[in-house]
Image (cartoon, rainbow over all chains, first blue to last red; front, side, top):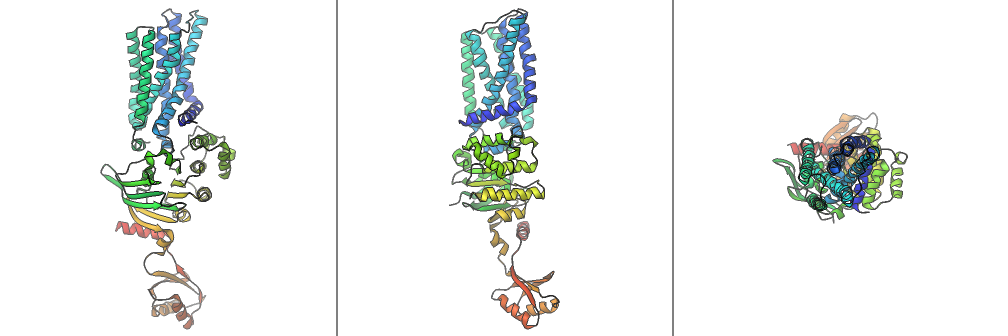
Length: 226
Length: 305
């Protein structure tokens, strides 16, 4: 099996076992993600908020999960053993990103889907799954989530515990602010061209982060353990 | 050809030098112990070999190359560091499944090894519920799962009670030595090193204070020590006079035994003959070797001087 998938499987398994983290994630998903979408649709403000809420939720859940995958392993020193294994740093990083981002994106999509279904059933405001919306939910949201997890993961590998505690939440807020600004510029529902540009930008960012993961100094990781 | 080798290895963190001019090598199937007090540079040496740290000077090689750059060569080593390297949330079998997948080792082997370590019944329990000793045993199973050619063990029995320490030592012997792996072990426990190591390096403040085969270090380089146990009722003072007259030096009484140094050219038979000639009975006589503890303390003393 591909080493990236081996790592991703392990991270997903560990996330599933972290019930408190999953519960917190679902709660955040329902309250912070699902409710605003439902409210926006039910009050007739349109589906524009949907395009912001789903990726924001993915980023926030990605933040929660990255703490488990990268930071926790560094805090307890397990990362040293993993670094001494045949895994390369890019494979390790990518496996963790795939594991965390797929979990976070899945919960984000389930919460968004739940809000859409509730809006359709309770408030009788159906939102048809257009090709643009499908690309947004099933391609862009996982990509944005993966970029957030990947960026946080790199930072967590490079910095010590205290610096991470200070910087991580700031990074997440910065990413969410960027998305919000983008949403304001685009104005509600983005055009297919904007969606495509965003997907491409995220793919390029992800590839760039993968390359950066290959340049991370193993000594830097080891010396910032604990 | 050595499997792992350090040549003039040095490491400094800023202005703090933690390792200086260390050269050593470990061959196939050899047990090699790194001894030294806390902060002597043992763990740093191991991390340098594993490519977790970069040398400030010199080289740390595994299979003639730095392991940091060679994932393919890292396949050939097993590692048990201070932490067991296991995710607490996963079960023992899931943890081993992860490392097994990286090395192409299947479930059957994993279960065999778990059974060997007495952990099969707990295979589906989360590692977070294991005791420190069980985690260490599991870590050892993980480290040896793929039958590595070199096994790095960093303080494998530290923090364990005496019974768990004995279990770990037995497991190291059975898992690692039977497979023919070379073992580089860091430890505070001299008996552990003595049991596993064929050769030993003693580190003090980042410098090599002694290096050699355990037996050679115990024999030492000075005059050979000889112990003579006298028959019950023998006069020790008279025996000491007789031995001194016969040429023995540094005579000391240790319980029911006289311990002395044999100057070059003096055969033990001459001493025994002198004793018997003086009517003093001898029950047992043998060459004495120093304990590893004596070797260690002497090396530490020399390094301090």
